[in-house]
Length: 120
Image (cartoon, rainbow, N blue to C red):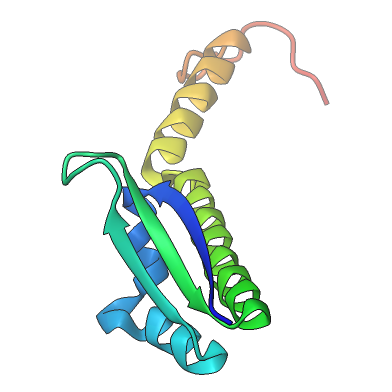
């Protein structure tokens, strides 16, 4: 018999699940011998789309697992990208902190001219 799983997903994730030129969804269809497609949930302005997977029971679950794995891989990639530091900004912060440290040590960026105590 044929079985169907439906799953509402954020519209922003659908392109990652389909893959470049449809590569991922085609691969899942081929590997699992299922029909996988996306429908509009609440119209074109909705934030959600419905993934529909149809086929033999075990194949439907396998296809769903493959699609959800891709969903989570994309989520991890997005988090890793968002967590990447802005190197230029960090270098500016470091330079500013070094200036502050110099001022706090009493150097102010200028030579002390031999006055004061010298530590060795």
